[in-house]
Image (cartoon, rainbow, N blue to C red; front, side):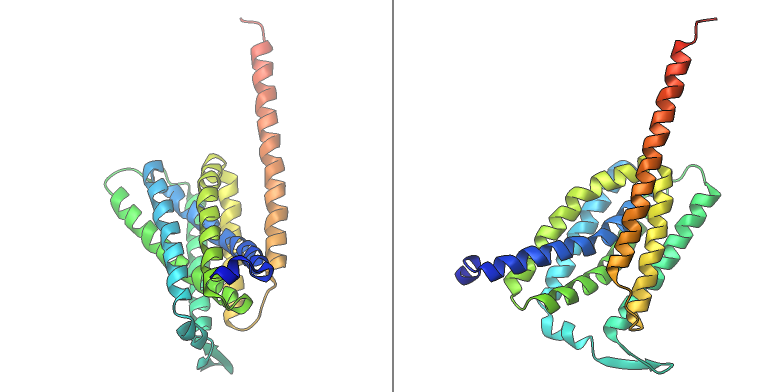
Length: 250
């Protein structure tokens, strides 16, 4: 352990792996921010805390099962000539889950139902939010930890990187969730991102890798456009308020 603390290579590996884990955690933060937006704020905060705590637990548990995890990459099933491992099957299932969930949420937004998040079904809604967070945490944790294993063979470095990344995810999840709730158009954009990420997971499961740089570039570009739209709407609202206040009383 002391050798790792004094090794420049170990620190370089920690910084690189932490940055990668944070980037991979963006998907998780977006999903949690969208999924908790349909329950009251007090429960949404609790759901974020539980979800991200579970994400940390799943990642550390998977790190402790390295031999078993590496074995997940061995083919166990062949479909239409494609050899699939357990990792592939989990990624495909998780990808389809994301696509289905995001599509359902888009449909809900289009229908514009009133009165969501209130009434006797709130407790049941909270339970299903936690269940969905657990499912997607497992999918994202698997992909994240397999990436970590490929970059470093030192378990303390991998655990440290995962803990730091989860802390960053926890700190950022609150502001992201608040922003999504305050600006409804960003929620539709986030749901579109989840569909895109789901497609990428399914493609990865079938050994067709879509470079994450392409996906994150598209997400960044779209987020910047939406940020300009938010600023433009605020400026128009301010101008309208000034015009109203400048009008002489009748």
